[in-house]
Length: 285
Image (tube, rainbow, N blue to C red):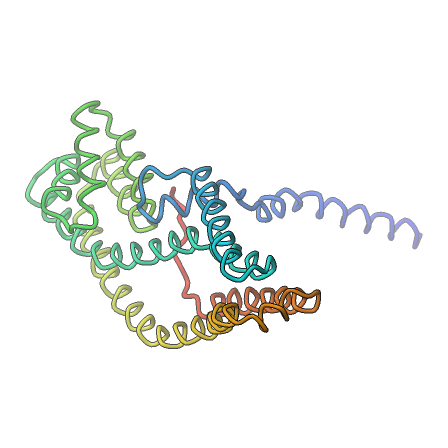
């Protein structure tokens, strides 16, 4: 009897595990390297750059940096260290552009949503109200909405133009605004103006709170970045001295550089994770 109960219990637990396995697999799904680069490029607002070009630019810059340092120091290990730093520079620049564009969009969205609500209240159609943002809206948002207006005039297909607008904005707030407009266009109703005004007030409060948090943590993050970069600046200065170059050209010097690079990378990633503020995910993309 005990064996039968144990068997039934095991079958029940196995059934529960098999039922939950697909959910766990979906949660563990991670974007590929190229798709992650594509997301970074879209969020940075840079046009004409593809993941392949970004990888090629990183490899070329890393090789050029390594060759330049090798010509000065004549030590391959030091050249490789600075070459790796140079290869990471393009992606770091794009990430910086993503953060800057995110701040600009957070400051611009309340005004843009107010303009959209005013246009809807004045009786303009939804496509005209969105296109109007490209003419009178904030400067950081005019480009995507001007493109939306041109696409709508050329095709007249409102859903497809909204999808293109979401892709070009690459912003969670933009996804919410676009889906609210799409829902109002499909089902109708008179609550769109009230919804947009409430959203504008919420975005202003969120932008004010986030700006205060970023101002408080900026000096800490900048100090941590300087602490990470300082050893490598010193290494670059020491590479001009022959005795230091001779020390780092040995096997022990290679181990010191490798250990220092690993510690610097780990400390930098840990600093970013500890100091990172929560970001809204694009669940409506």
